[in-house]
Length: 344
Image (tube, rainbow, N blue to C red; front, side, top):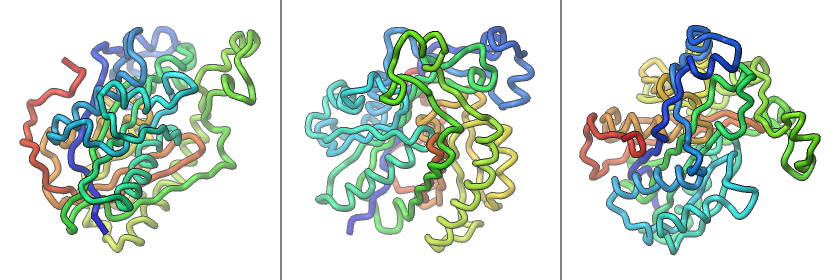
């Protein structure tokens, strides 16, 4: 059976920077309050001409360019998003067209901010069952700026727009994805959501007047969910993989809130790991946050061949997902000076 791992990474962050000061005005808070509560200083915002598919395509192109792989050689595109271009067709189909991956089967996954980890798990299983030499693009992309109520300090201060991608393919047996874990607690689905716009509450004048198309979140409930479920899920994954806590070198979490991550970090018990954070500059980019952070760390040369990397997502549903991988050798020439695609 072919071992599957990450061959390349890519990101696309819109060029427009939105500071805390700009967000604070409408939310009735201060720049200092946002930083103290979240660890976020600024975030990126897509321009009016950009949709989620545009960001996703930019990240996908960056990963393909890094790997030196042609779009037509991609067998699968799995796109994680909770802000699709529109209800149908799948946004992944549009990405396939934009990048010219004419031979790829393309579909979306919505596990909210756990989406990238869920999508990676699905793509890894598909490739393991396929012929050798095939590739899959796994993308996380979201434009939360379109569904935020900027008067709500619980949500408006957190989110930015962006996309991140990885290219999966065959790697040496000693490397690649070692184990994955997916968890859903549907009894707590009400903690996060967009109430209207679906089959339960279709769009009408009343839902618009109520602001029911905006993203809503029970912040305290989400914090409790993460504290109760994330450490247990990661410990169970490491035990199942037979990996000791001190052997994990890198932890790449969903960039939900820097203060919350700092609070849960001791319970994870990873004494030798570096927790990689990109939220100070980019905020919470939803399903894009794990692959964006992964790409930043990779392009800065943080990962050595064979390093054990633990990625974790958590979000609406409520969901938790994790992927344990050993970093595979790549032909990418590392440089800390290479810019992220889309930030120029």
